[in-house]
Length: 446
Image (cartoon, rainbow, N blue to C red):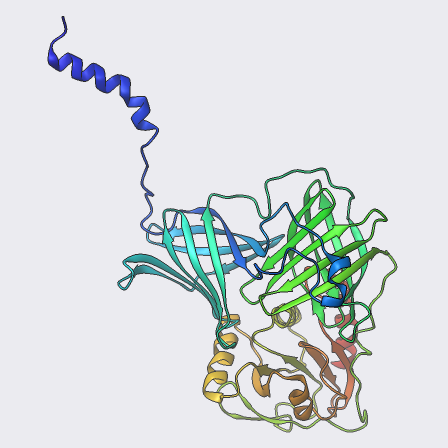
C-alpha cells in the first residue's frame, strides 16, 4: 500500500493538467504587451445603425449593419519595443504606417492603475487610456476643440479590423466610383471613390475637390462594406450597402461631430473639377504683398531681400490638417531631390487657436519635428472667411491646403486647390505636373 508521500505526489500529477489550464503567464515586458492591438473609437453609438440622419429621408435610408458593432470605428496598431524598457506605437491604415514615439506610461497614483498617453504633437491630439490585462480603456482627445473626447477601447492580440466574418461579397468593388455626399441638399458635394478589393479585404480612399480621405481599410461582407481610418488627426468611418442594381448607399462619420449620407455609382470616367480652376485670382497683374509674423515671432514680409526678384510658392495650410502634412512632405522631398531648385517656399498656417502664445509654439514644433527648411508664418484663425481677408488677392479660400505660385515679380501664375495625397491614384500625376510647372517658373529646363 503506498505511503502518504507517494499518494500526495500522485494526486499532484493527475491534477497538474487541470491546474495548468488556469495558469496565467505574466507579460515579461514591464509595460504593454508587444504586438498587434485592435483599437475602437465609439464615434456614434446612438445613430450609426442607420444610414443618414435627416428625418425626412430616414425611412428610405434605414440599413442595419449586423456584421459589426454599431457606432464603432476600428483601427489597428502595433506596440514595438526599442529596448526592454521603451516602446513606440505604429498606427496601421492600409499601406500607411504612422509612428508615434511621444508616449507616457506609468502608474496613476489616483487610480493605482497603469495609464498610457499617446500624443500626436503635429496635430495637437492624444489618446489616453487605463491599461489592465491586455485591455486599454480611455479617450481620444482633440485639444483644440472644447470638450472633444471620444471613448476609446483597445484589446491585445485581436488581428482583425471590423469583423472575423468571411461572407461572400456580393460584388467586387475594385475600380472608380462617382460619389455624391448629401445629394439633393444645399450641403451636397462630389467625390470619387477609388477601391481595391481582394476577397473580403477592401482598401482605398475618397477623393474630393478639397482633398482626400487618406488611407482607408476595411471589409466587404455580403452586400455591406466597411472602411475606416484613424491617423491621430481624423477619425473616418464609412459604412455602405450594395444595392441589387450595383449602386451603393452609405453613411460617413468624421469623428463624433459630423455625419453624412452618400451614394455611389461605378464610373471609370468620373472627374472632379480642375484644382487649378477652383480658386480665382482677383487681379493677376497685381503683385502679392504680405506682412505677417513667423513661427519665431519675427516679422515676415514678401518684400524682404531674400524674396525680392525671386519666384515664390506660398502654401496655405494648417498643422491640424493631414492633407497639408502630405503636401508638406511632398515639397520637402522635391526640394531635397532638386538642389538646383531656387524658389523660396513659405507656409502660411491658419490654426485652431487665436492666441499667439499657443499658435507659435505649435508652428515651431511642427517645423522642427518635420525639419522644414523654409519659413512658417502665422496667417490667423482657421476659418475660411477670415483667411480670405488675410489673402485678399484671391476670391476666397476653398481648401486647406492651397498652393499659390508667384513669378519673380510676385504676380500669381497658378493656384492649386486641395491635394491628392499618396493614398490616391493622382499623386504621381501631381508630382509630374508640379515639376513641369515650377521648373520654367524657376528658369530651369523641364
